[in-house]
Amino acid sequence: MINGASGRYGRSNVPVIHNTRMRQVQRLFKELIGLNVIIDNYEVRNG
Image (cartoon, rainbow, N blue to C red; front, side, top):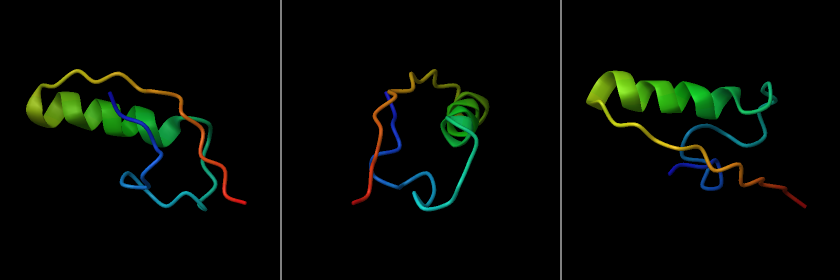
């Protein structure tokens, strides 16, 4: 399971279409190492 809480998959202050970044990361895990991951929709709010 992955989520965007750590900022590991991109900076949190960059505007993106909802969940696009996480879907890209999910696809890369599958393509590069054959690992299926689930996206946790944990929402990060600064301030």
